[in-house]
Image (cartoon, rainbow, N blue to C red; front, side, top):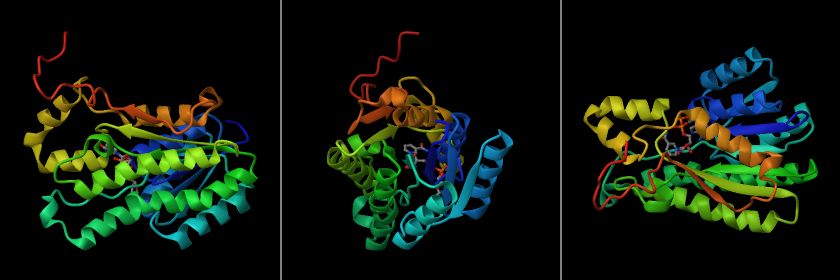
Length: 259
Ligand SMILES: NC(=O)c1ccc[n+]([C@@H]2O[C@H](COP(=O)([O-])OP(=O)(O)OC[C@H]3O[C@@H](n4cnc5c(N)ncnc54)[C@H](O)[C@@H]3O)[C@@H](O)[C@H]2O)c1
């Protein structure tokens, strides 16, 4: 990925940070975008510490103005754009669907679904002008099978999967591949916070995964880098499930695994 430019939305922590570091380790210049200044700057320092080149831009993935500013800075500083991970997202408090407020629904949709659309709306022309590339949108297994008490998040992630397929089809002959990834649980700050609040949920969450563990952020990052690489040159419109076996674990009769 030498001479290539990668952009990570929500690169200031967790999976986004791991993705920025993985792009950089593969030789790309990395633009790190985050709504939180401290995390974004820390990621940039980590990129630089491993010998990479990058740029941090503080921006909100739910804002068209912010995204346009990010792409303008990317073009000015690095001359183009080739690879993207649209990774930022916002859930809601865990609530029954009838208790969810309109404001909570709109906030979640505004970043988690609309933010991915807005990001691609402004990323696609720059990638095309740079000679083509690839986009990976981070969805979730919740977007395939639903998630009780996270109806807005699940609906938004389902939307990300379908939006990805629509854009993949539009751009398939224009040199831009567009795929999504559906992670299961990832061992990030957000997940740690949740498990710290409800320690009784830890075993249940781990057992939802056939592998009995969460993903490390690097395991999702590796899949992003693969989908953006030449090794994935004929893959577009695909939703890659990277979930340690959430989707294949039986929820009817659980015989456990043969270990
Ligand atoms: N953690 C999990 O278990 C899990 C499971 C399935 C899918 N996912 C998805 O993976 C992706 C990454 O999750 P994570 O756990 O690494 O997240 P995280 O909470 O660790 O990090 C998310 C980063 O995005 C930034 N961010 C949030 N809103 C933003 C906005 N509006 N604009 C710009 N930046 C913003 C945050 O400041 C943070 O740095 C998300 O799309 C999430 O929905 C996570």
